[in-house]
Image (tube, rainbow, N blue to C red; front, side, top):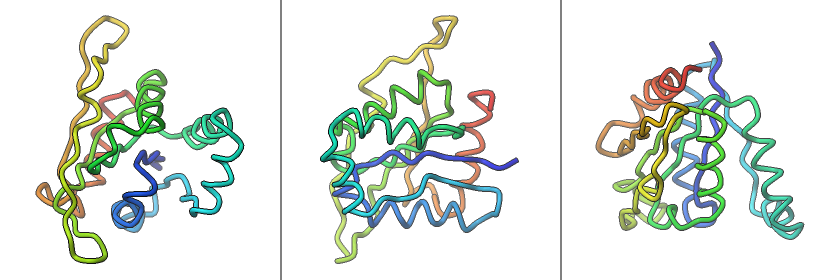
Length: 161
């Protein structure tokens, strides 16, 4: 079964690390897809058209996906569009997981500070009122390179997808 994942992240700050994670998942198997990345010029063009244009773009990119992967950097939890993507993913019944990027080096060989888990801002429940928690893994310390496929598959199955 082909898995379609939506990646949620802080574009300006984390795009280089995001590319490493997303590309690792995609090249491991042919049965994986993810939304295309926008370059900075395309993202700026969408932003200039306003919040509704951003929301419409996000909603269109989420169509047909079974899992949302929230890539957690130092400031991800405070990004309003990441918050929207998390809330929308839960509302749509998608599987979700977080991947903490703490411990990954940037292009200069530096480490960023650890971010706050964005799921901790919410109490999610299912239709029966049962509290739902979404797992968060560490890319660096939980061997993300070899485990991302398993994590995404588990999130999809947990959501019944």
